Length: 369
Image 1 (cartoon, rainbow, N blue to C red):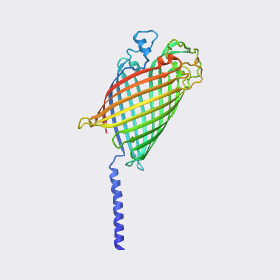
Image 2 (image 1 turned 30 degrees about the vertical axis):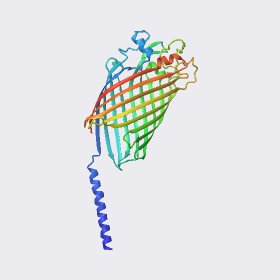
Image 3 (image 1 turned 135 degrees about the horizontal axis):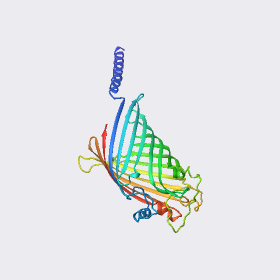
Image 4 (image 1 turned 120 degrees about the horizontal axis):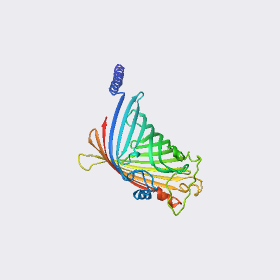
């Protein structure tokens, strides 16, 4: 009996000592960790305002019907970004993280179209290795984004059109398998326009699903689907002008009418480390996005030629590479191809809404922690 009692006492002492030692080791970790990423990108964009082919031709011909005050269709851009972040090792083995992302885009010749974006993301997860769930909330805004000159149908004048965008999202993710994450996302957002174009004001809600799988052969695959329902909340404002159209003519670009729409968005991405030259390891990715938007107005084609029966297919693809030139310095490069293909019973709609845009960029990011 005594050996058993002695062994029990010894095991108890070792257990208490182990817990005390583990607690002591945990106290060596700071309650707060912080990080900072500061970046600069040099970009060439061959269609900064996403103009259609006829609009580009009108600009190059100095056609007086094209009133948007651009200097060039293409432009060089400098993109500055700063991303401070913080992690809090909260009680009950909980990790709370927050990151703020700021981006400022400056254009060389068309500086009236400069813009900024801001986002704030907070996440909560267990503070254990191989955690199985994570919750996240985020807010995103573009305070002012320039579109182009549109005709104000109330007064028959031509004015600059700008909007501000807000978006709020929540996401919950679970890991049913070590290599697989599944996420459910929901959100709400708005586009509110400047005083001359409040008829364009839109609010939307969305829900999405995502799966991310780390394959045994190194690449990580991500697939995401989002369903977005948009309501043109400004459409019923009183107007003095009713749009009309002629099949034989190209319409003047606008978005008046009932802009309610449903959109399905599909995203696919593959990301993988690449080794071309030892000991350099590159991080390569290829992502693509397809947005299929169907306008749902019940107005006649005479009352709403821009939306009745209209389908927008918007597609983009982006290959990119990045590598750590130094432990705290990342170099990255990318290329983006984007296009919109609008289908409508009114031929002029496609002519003024279709566009193609290409963008190539080279960036440096300095990382602290």
